[in-house]
Image (cartoon, rainbow, N blue to C red; front, side, top):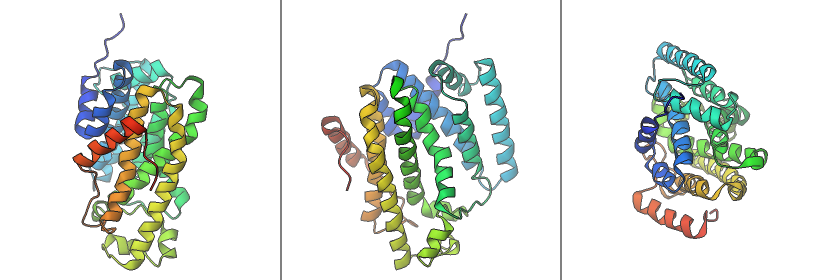
Length: 289
């Protein structure tokens, strides 16, 4: 007899970690909703193994190595009693999610062990692909895309990069206090800045010009990714549309905050989310700004 898969822990994970996504998921079928929950829970836990143990590189390496080992064992077996791995492996097998995607995610979060600097945007883009784009690539397999999957890949990759670039812009101050700077060193230099300027939280006109440049880049990725929404099944489209719009709105909040990224963490308040949700429901994703 097949093991009964329990998605309750996975749902609780997304309820606590992302109220917006959890709310939007209610508009999908139960089957697709459970798939989103399982993928989210796996990704969240993998990321937390590193983030929750910041400053302890030996422990981080031990935890992520053990997690990868347990995941591969569960994948080989096709099931697991673990409340995260069990549902995730079940969804992987059921939807033919390639093994390389979760392995790329594990590789990506491992890049945050210790202080890591990026010399170029190409290096940062690889990081964004691993920690964000592959999440979209996994979700793509549970959206009922059928033969549209190959067409959707490029848009999922671009959306993941856009969202991770937004995370980086939102968390500049928080990351700097942990000794992390994700901005490419060659681009900082183009604006007369250094890693040290960010770590020491120096706000200058040059920094603002640099942040404007980064916001424009993130918006370009959103603009390119939006074309893929039409390919997504209707009941999953609202979830992706909300993620797309809420994250893009963070860029606008950063601008409204006068690019004060050191002491203000840009976020979309509840009223703003409600307004955006109704706009999405009635008219689809708002045009870029």
